[in-house]
Amino acid sequence: MGVADVVDEFERDVLAANAPLTALVANCVVSGAARMRELEERIAFPSWPGATSASALNRAAREAEITAVLADYADAARRLIRPADQKRWGELVADAQRRRGEGVLRDELGRSAVGASRLRDELGGGPRRVPSRRGIVCDCGYARDGVLPPLLCDECEQLMLRRWVAEERRLLRGMPAYAEDVAQVIERVAQRQTKVFQTRGDDLSSEAFGKRKAGARRLGRLRTRHRAELADLDLGRWAGFVAPLSRASTTSVRSTVQKTHRRGLGAAALTELAVRADQEGIASFVRYSEGRRNSRWQI
Image (cartoon, rainbow, N blue to C red):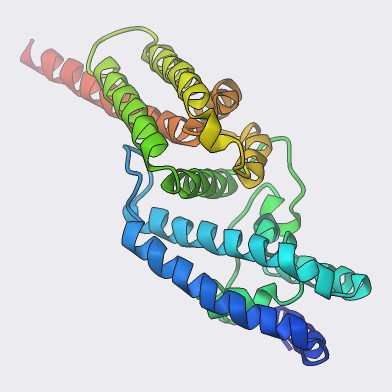
């Protein structure tokens, strides 16, 4: 029996003996499916420049929505579940994810409750049942045991950043005016970063970082302007990405997270612009090097 099958079997036994919980799962499948259909209609909103492919961002968006559905389910389900069953289920989930090399994914199920694995499968978010699947290729251990290392490896850093951006977009999707304001800030910062790397200078990366910090200050003003919309919003999962990404191995990502996260929504998008800036910096260096080489040949 596979590790995921152990969780599923335990859930089947609990649900078979708990009619109210079974009914709740069924209702959440229906409401969750409706949420997923609505997401597909608006999955490209809000939009801003970034460093992630559209397909990867869409996958992360679906995952973020399913995680939110599971969190809402847990709020209603826990009163129907015996504490001993919930405790045992949590242990099985943690073990299954560790064995699959997905400890870093535990917020998806680990924050939910018995029945969440079935609900996730029904919504299309379950893990692929491929025997040869190796899980996340991880060099820092975070994807195996969920223990935060001194520095994240590249794979975990990229995964966490995609998830942070996806969660940010999910939250903003419910506040269209705020989302448009944030998108304008990100677009402006991206344009100014690009202009930085079209010039010559000794420390273009620091100059680009300055553009991101200026953008963060504008995000802070937006947060104040939209504070009424934010009053009842649960930012727990969004804020939960700050600690791991503050240990990103990429200096530009780490420094941007640390300087911008207190400014509110939009910080994830600004952090992704750090990745974009690194890419533009490399391209600028290559152009400069090729120009110098061509000049020497002309001489």
